[in-house]
Length: 246
Ligand code: COA
Ligand code: AMP
Image (tube, rainbow, N blue to C red; front, side, top):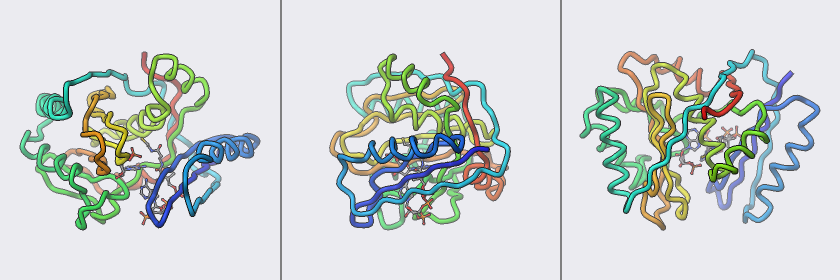
């Protein structure tokens, strides 16, 4: 039997960090301890740990997306590289992709703050998330042996963030109607972003200017995507990943 452990932490109502692990029952105490350890140097006034039994059989994915990394002189060059890949690999017009991606840099929520989850945009350029302040959040995903995967990725020079985001993007792209994910962190000093597309997790350095506290994610989907089914997959279906794609 598997359990999802989720932790989220905030300061003055602002979300600071969140993480999820999927583990067997006997590992729960150690994992909770490790998650608390991770945030011990962060300033926060609220933290919530949620442990839930997973009732549904998880989807097992043998491999994650394949990681590639590209470095650029500035974020504008990285962005145009990402947009070119998108227009080569999808039916989404460059101008459409650009219009929505630009919103992430100014705050994609209607009040110009960051959204609390991802925006959803179809090939026609329609925004589909049910709530434009919240968006949709991908949950219920982890690597089966996270410690081994983390070790492997750190050895290759990646970060813990890569572990988390790679798992999330791998779950996302496993949904066949979800064609691409574009992401920039809302952390002002983390400028690496990524485009997940066509089996790849393409890290782009830098994808935003240093010091910008805006960020977000866009899930680009096929026109015939059923939005309730997409939400159900992202929020309710557990996915476990066996290994990275080397
Ligand atoms: N950003 C901003 N606010 C968030 C948030 C996020 N990522 N996750 C939760 N919140 C806040 C929201 O106010 C939310 O209310 P809402 O549903 O109306 O938006 C509230 O917390 C409760 O959210 P809930 O979904 O019940 O949280 P949870 O306890 O189930 O935890 C997380 C969810 C934090 C584990 C999940 O959102 C998450 O981020 N998981 C992935 C972490 C990760 O690896 N991210 C990739 C990093 S690169
Ligand atoms: P982060 O990579 O944690 O800095 O998050 C960047 C942005 O992605 C946030 O501002 C949210 O808009 C969005 N986001 C955060 N968590 C999730 C999630 N679990 N699923 C989808 N989008 C998310």
